[in-house]
Image (tube, rainbow, N blue to C red; front, top):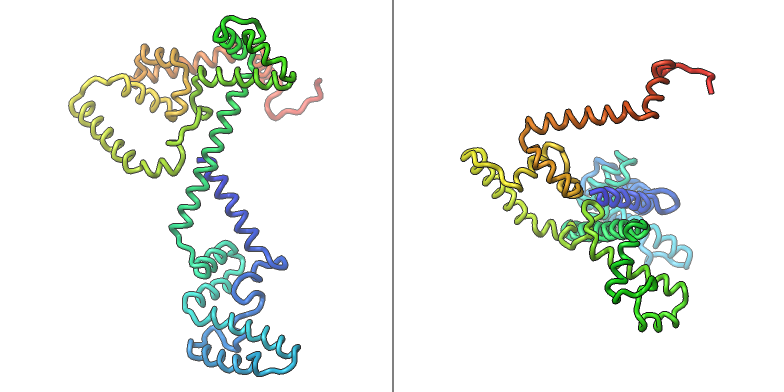
Length: 343
């Protein structure tokens, strides 16, 4: 899905923003900030856990706030004690220490640091992340489909052909009233409405008629709850089982028993030869689909012959097109790489 790709892109951007907060440096929010945890404790990367713990205890006794007097000294000691305690929390745990070493070795891997740090720090359940992500994608997917459908309805409302047809149906349903679109009671009620309100009410009636009578197929079809990602995942076992049953039935009936294809199988083969998705194929006019069936395009040889005829017809139409003729003359006289000063 395109929507899912856009969502992932925005997630990466948000992660980047989170990773670069704090005085413009992404390290400020992680581990020991801009300080080096090993240097704060006076140890090296080769130091053992026992050496790190020993150094921490010594520094903790030295900078413990209770051992200092005076407000300024006490506050300075408290800040130092916090930094030392943070450094020890990072280095005492083997997993946290490995993540910190990875940060030191790969300072530009922003998103990896973000994931490693908050995976352990916040103890976020990966299952919860997956559930939230799928929910967000499903919501965006559903809203996007409604926006596409609304765009299609507004487009049909703007076309005089469909707008006039809808007005005729409104007049017939109102008992054959005039162009006002209502009987006596409608006229009485319209007196109380302003022109803008009348126009809005009229557009709503036209929209309702178009929605009830227009069969929109393809990407702009009216969205259904079963199309969102959550429902599709919930129905995935059923979908997989149904596909396996369909594939086994196809092999049994048409490969082994050599039975003739039914209408559904014929349309499937035609769609596969044309390399169209189910949504794209459903958007084709029913008359055109019936013509495909009459030409028996589910037979590969018939389809290949039909495809060649379509390509030749398209070439003929282009050859008869005045603009294409002018383009051919220009390419013949001047060529694709020649520069001239002709007007």
